[in-house]
Length: 182
Image 1 (cartoon, helix red, strand yellow):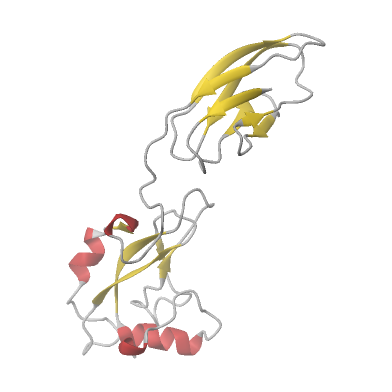
Image 2 (tube, rainbow, N blue to C red):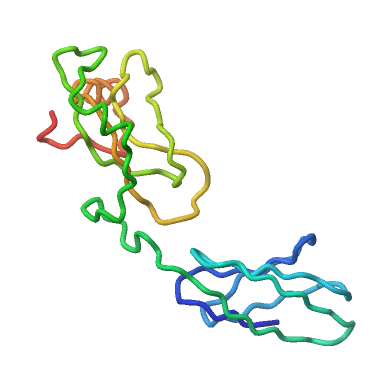
């Protein structure tokens, strides 16, 4: 049993290194590890945008010990994900450099810059299902597991490729075309 002191909404948790034991830290800061065998164990205490802390504990049979730990946390870079907040946008110089160049499929169209959601928060280009037909649809970036709040990233896109992609894939509604882009 123990208590972790950290800012609210940091989703702190505790695991026992090298064992299959762990516990989520409640909103009140308390956690309980049950069934931990007697002996020395190292706890890893982490939180969302917080420095991890390791503490060695000794568990004795029939005795409930307590641990009190404070972890240091930094500011969440994008606390309220908003496309209009510059702190929420991952800048992408490669995509910025493509702005104004001609689309490979629609040579009369010049690529524009848009800000689209990063899904699952690993930055990587989520290419359309058929990149030969829609090379500059640039709908979203994706990959991995959810570890942070949603952010946004810059992408160069062709409005014709994007429109053609949506026409061919009407079920794709993650990032709908804005009326002014049609």
